[in-house]
Image (cartoon, rainbow, N blue to C red; front, side):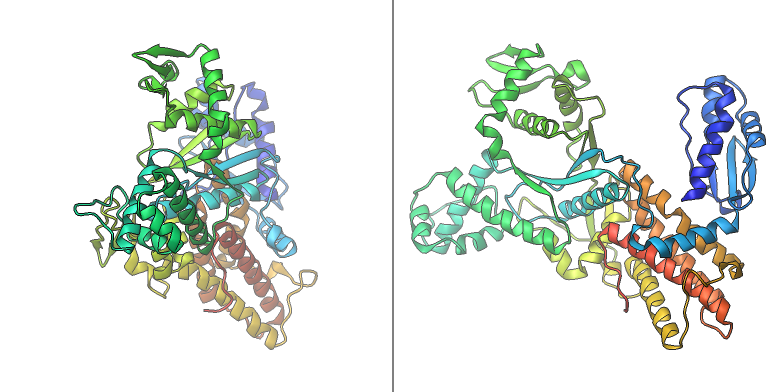
Length: 546
């Protein structure tokens, strides 16, 4: 996006005489298209430092700006102090040629500078199948990883497997119940325990007959049975994630921390002077760092807490050299943030090392009515069931259409529609339509090589609007990556598809005018490429026919 860099550098030079410090130059798309193609609020940032009227500062900056006419057509100022730019159409044409030249590399950048970043997401306990909130986290986390890589970060996706502790023991007891149920040896009044879902009956059915008889008879500890069940469930979780198109660089098991890492981090916390004994328990002084209270890290019976294990896990991330740890958590984990940041600060991490995203609740809606679910009763819709119902592409896209921390009503009725009412099909259809048009054009003998095509023939407003949207792509991807907001990409995909459909209906692509046909076909091909690049980052397929 050459014109964006030109504007950024020109603004940097124009604000130099003000002598202000630490003034970042933000470039964004105006809310109203009539205000221009790109806007900067830099004058308002300066106004706070200089205690001057922002509109006066904006006008002064604008008067200093000078551009080659091939890149910026005009500069304007709007209250309360925005500096707005309209791109020259030649810059849009140049960018369109750049798309067809760079293809799947278009929009990539080295903004991340190769910085090593870890994204931990999903991390659901292996005590049952993944449910729809986990599916949403899978969609969001995978796109954050993809977007970060696209703009030059060394991003790694990781799943933290909670395969240790009370929940595993309880899972083991529930498995023993299912084994006895399988062998018709259930004692009178027996209760299934904390995991009543039918999925454990499937796990029990897969246990070797001899081992099943031993375990049902009381052999084997709860932790042994739990470890077996957790291992089997993790295999299924991994298969479901694969079906969803989500892959991780690493699955990190909590049990590995109990081989010395927890004791090591406990020693470091004690040596730091930020712990104390009370009523036989050991507390970490997290309230001194902004937490609402201090946290127990070793209980009165000498057992360490889950919080300490979690600190050890984050310390391991830090030891592995990640410059930033991004973590997606469920909506009931707000309290995790201040205490974990406190612990990591004591262990040497920067204040902003840990970046936590709270993923909002998901409600399934059908025909306008809420589908009731209860995980406690073992009655819930799994991620696999959702994939089988609406498909991975649709499920993923719907999860990504809203800001991650906002609650989401997932409209199953809409998701099942194979029409342009469905946002996913609307975008995919734009890609498929272009593929169809270009196939038809080739059959008619048309060609549109970048060396011979004359994009100067593209002068209609729908053509300009479409080229402008292509130019925005790198700006949108970088913004989505650094802000951890994948919904920006689905919004962009909808806008680009809309711009293409309008262009398609108002500007006949294949006509008797061979030169104009070639120019419009090249624009269509560039649009198809950017749609594909966007869908690739989203992990959604780009079909050539529908």
